[in-house]
Length: 567
Picture 1: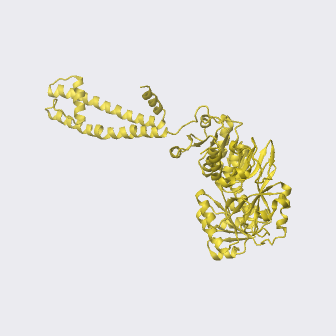
Picture 2 (picture 1 turned 45 degrees about the vertical axis):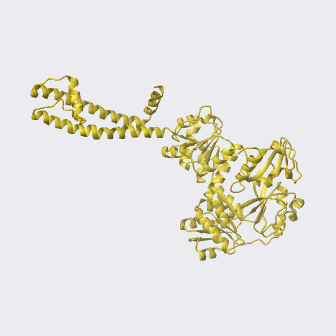
Picture 3 (picture 1 turned 180 degrees about the horizontal axis):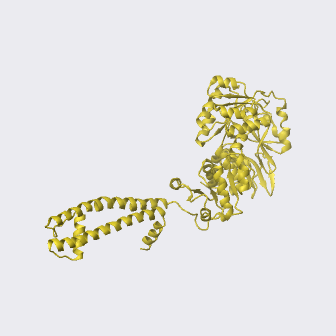
């Protein structure tokens, strides 16, 4: 009985259920009034026309048996007026009891009850005692990628959704979701925002501003990370109270632009005072040499920790032969990276413009950065307005479809050192990567991507480097949550820092088998605030030290499974 009572109270709090229940009760009241009127008329006709007298209970009994069409026949009228009255009662009973009542019950009670049960499956608040969790205001592509990374970090998170059907869908998919209005303080109070570690505001720019202002009233100190679509809104969201505003689309364009030029060792990240950089082998004397023959450590002091080959990160063993498509991942200090540029000062650099296909927000950001770095750019876009807007930043602009061979040829795909694919259509980018690769075998192809499932496909199509909006956004948010600098190494490639497992303490890197068993590249060992980067096969893994490794999620999972016993 206690359960039934609690459930009833629960359902009666639902507005829709309460409204429908009132409609049903009104109909039942109308039905009751009709039954009473018929019972009174039964007494009047029986007494004044038939000359028979019955109790009130008999009147109700006769009315209900006739209206429900049971018709026992033990009480009947003999006069025409009485029989006409019986017909009226019978017909109204068929309509009100047998047609309208079941419909009203189903429509205004049973269905609302089921809907109420369904709606209330979605939690309205986080569990009591929840602390240090991350709140996310939308289940978008960035959130989906971020959530996978938070699961690996064993960080608690919740998505706030204001659309009930979507909230139900996410709940059924086992996404930690709570339902509530995004501009309501009550929603964030129920989400325990004062005890949260951070909140990610990732709606559109206008709604983001409203959410930030709402949050700041009840949680003045909570770190707010906002995702901005337009650069113009960054300042507005900062003034509204956001601690970090991330213009991810602009960043994506700039990250892609940094990968198209092969003129210098480009820094792509930093750990402590060490810089992680990429050094394209193309046009250098390193082509066809092995890692050992290259002798970069002996000559410049830098360490080669991995190699990019057509978008795939491979660990270094020393005997790998470098090709014109190889891109070395090296680490060193600022002076070492500057000194290594002597490798390419005398190279026969391709002077032709870089070709950018797609001039939206991402493409235009890439074009602007390339222009800033004094790199000539030719742009192709099918939208004349975009072409007009980009003309001031480009060497040449071509309006039309990039799948047109004559247009690609005229735009310089056969002579270009690099092509940057920045359309927001994965299928088109895959097609163009394959097409451009067939037209120019030495072309460096850099592309954006949306869906993670398409990454391997576009690499097979010929892309050298791929980066997605989701990966960049999630990496940025995760770096902020950890208080680290943003390091974008590539799609699904990250730095992993872990304490030395007890099973590896005192072993050398060669004995540990980390690279052979997992594919991870050990780039540094940190012990007592000292960072060791000049690693050899004989370097020991001390007890209590931290291992800094480079690799993807699959590699990290293998490491956890083999050395930490985590599945």
